[in-house]
Amino acid sequence: MPDKTEAFLHSQTKENLMRAFAGESQARNRYTIAAGIAHKAGLAVIESVFMFTAGQEEVHAKQFYRQLADLGGQTIRVDGTYPVDIFADLRDYLRAAQHNEYQEWEHDYQHFARTAMDEGFPLVGKLFENIANVEQTHGDRFGKFADLLEKEQLFCSQVDVQWTCLHCGYVVTSTAAPAQCPVCRHPQGYFVRVELSPWS
Image (cartoon, one colour):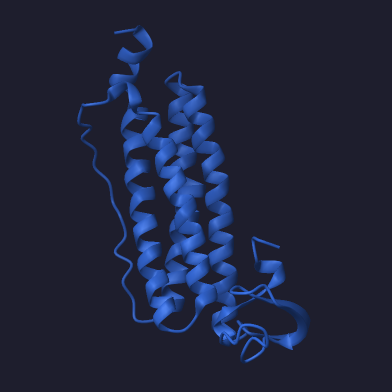
């Protein structure tokens, strides 16, 4: 075994990668569950936010897992704490997601990055840093939608804004999203502010 592989085998970084893989995998599943709840509530826009983010969490999990390729066939034992985010209110799902993303950004991945650097794995350290920055974006996104729900402004605004239908792409400028899309007839729950759409 090369020296680098031997060092990795006995490193804290190896365990942190597995913790990160587990955390990202669980986040993906929590977000798909939350998306299902949003779907039942008729809020396709919130469903899309959760599913869009879940897809990115899956990519993160794959990137962390790939770093463990030299240990293929082995078992890594780690401890960890993971949230039980089961709520009655959809806003609580958004706030919990915001909190968890910020936890990864501000604490977990910054710490894992420093450890990887100290142990001589700069590429892994940089990966943790880069994904930490993405987690901040995720937290910001969840927070914005939670704010809109709490202020009852998910589909209305005090000033004219552009709204787009997530189903057909229809765009309208107004203080409120249409109750029904005039093109595809999908309900208001499919509308999002263009400025909050990652696809604009």
